[in-house]
Amino acid sequence: MTKSQDDKFSWVSLYLVSGLGNTGFLNLLNRIGDPSVVLDTSLSELMNLGGLREDVARRIVNREFVADPDDELAEVDRLNARIVTYADPSYPAFLKQIHYPPMLFYLRGNDLPVNKMLIAVVGSRHATHYGLNAARAIGGGLAERGIGVVSGLAKGIDSAAHAGCLKGNGFTIAVMGTGIDTIYPPANRSLSEQIIEKGALISEFPIGTPPEAKNFPIRNRIISGLSRGVVVVEATKKSGSLITSSYALDQGREIFAVPGSINSFKSRGSHSLIKKGAKLVENADDIVSEFFFEIEESKTEDRSKTFSDTPPDMDAREKKVYEILGDYPIHIDQIVRTGEMDPGEVLSILMKMELKGIVRQMPGKMFLR
Image (cartoon, rainbow, N blue to C red; front, side, top):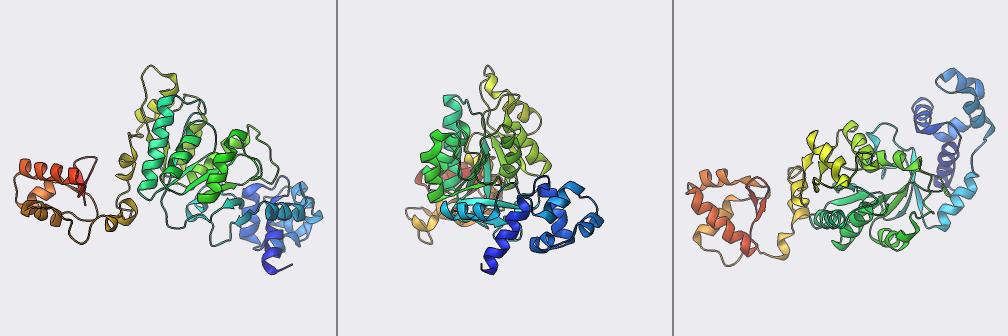
């Protein structure tokens, strides 16, 4: 066994100790260090650390695991999956910031991107046609702007958000409430294969974990934890999506909600969030506008594919406005002041340039190249 394999064996072994949990694991990690050292620590030493139940300490010492670590690792290899531990450089920094971060997770597909902004899109499993269209459009719009989409692989809004992101050639992450080997719902097997090819499936649950109801609220903290913000597309007052948004608030993430019909009970959860201060969004640009200072323009619009240094077919007034614009959105009033131009004239010029595809208008009369 190589050192890398030995390390993974120790991590998986400790992870499979019943009753330890992520908090107990992290406490041991902080006090003792490497999991292999923890596994070799005596019962008296473990008990002297405090905060560890004696029955759990005995399981560690006696190496009593809920599954055989060797079998677990063999199954990971068979699935062409891998294990990402809390100590791995590729472990997402945002996820480390949450309460109870998973000490490891299983991954199928591509490595999670280090510098890409991620937004969660969640909602009802029993979505309306309106909700599905909204989720697909937002997922695709975020992808086109270089932003990854995180969701839960559930039917309804989750599936539509994943599909929209994939159609936009984006990177999507499905956080599963089952073992990495168990696709749920089974109808999403084809979607999961596309995600493996272009994105990633991840799960904190051991191989073979079935789709038990208690697992899905637990995994929701990871959906929000990976993301800079959470978009709730369609949710009833008792929707699991509200659990995700609650985690997001605790984690300091932004909350967005898509409005629905006042007559639809399936949008009451979304409307409740808006009343409490969530930002009402209709499209991906409404979300991007909250983060544009953090997003490189090359990720939101690749102008190099369309224009050289100066776009073609511009008259003198358009060139003047173009020179004032930059990589980040600026308000029309600033363009008027900088260019010493008439507001009506500037608005007319900007509208012409937008029709030509030279500039983009953001919410709030903000414009960028």
